[in-house]
Length: 246
Image 1 (cartoon, rainbow, N blue to C red):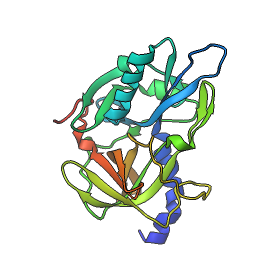
Image 2 (cartoon, rainbow, N blue to C red):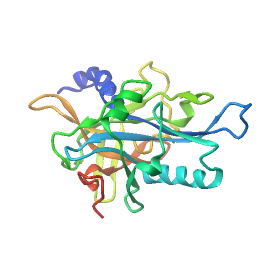
Image 3 (cartoon, helix red, strand yellow):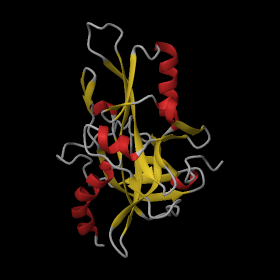
Image 4 (cartoon, one colour):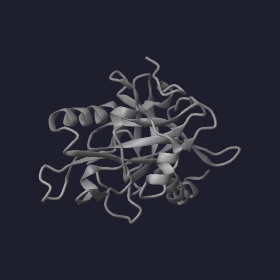
């Protein structure tokens, strides 16, 4: 596909990507007479591997939730995937500190029936996917905390996305360089480089044959150089049942 056609198709692709992930966020309400405030957020991806319906995020996002839960208690905290209240620790499958990944059981009925906005699992044709290679073009995104607008127990968290190219793909990290000439936001606002909150977000490969589709191939876990480079983990670290390859 030529670059211009790729750019023109990006808006459509970003909507597909957004449907398969959601903000993973939690709020605290210390005083019933005061509105709740958001403590932290990350991003969680929904994927049906053919064997299990999973939620996948960066482990450091989940660890922050557990830290806040231990400090404040579940009587003052509320955690949500998108607009749906959940107790992540009750749905946890596995954690990997080494890979900075965490997985959860997230049934399709939870994702489709209880989200404030339309969401679904990414239905993988095969799992695990092939690893990304240098020079492959990808679409990636997530929910930066700096863009969120709090509304007490609810919040608006816009999905921020970009096209990029794989610069390196070693065993430890996928290194993605977002294209500098493509705005992240669909309303053409200036590019936001404070990407905290996108951790756990998807990295999709663009597959062009035999038909154009997105293939989930990685999960964001870190940003370097003010967002000029994105570090992600290979999706094949996650087994079909949600456990990890160590």
